[in-house]
Image (cartoon, rainbow, N blue to C red):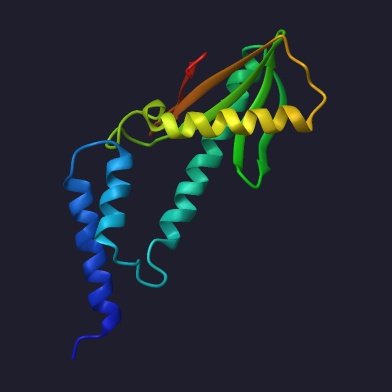
Length: 166
């Protein structure tokens, strides 16, 4: 007799394989997974989530080091409100900069910067307005940057800073 959990796990693995074989940006992969509509088996993917969070935290640390090294002043990090999170808020001279940090270990799903799609950019603009409403900072100019971090097997991570990305 086959256990229900084994069947669910196998179905989920097949769906993941279909997504991996499909082409297109991560948004397409998410759409495929939603359309397939089979829930993850209990406990499946927990380690991957923790690994992904660790990679993201590493990328944010490298991004902060890079930006501060470039002369920017860190104002806030991982600022949260009910609508979402801003990775980094910094000042570059008289300009207030809201940075989205994307970290990827490989390019299988595109470059890190390609993950910042129009929906994400709109959300970051709304979050920036909320951040400014909550803080007494009145900048001359506001800019939205993307910092891409690619950890390397050996040596320092590659960091790319796209100023005025959107």
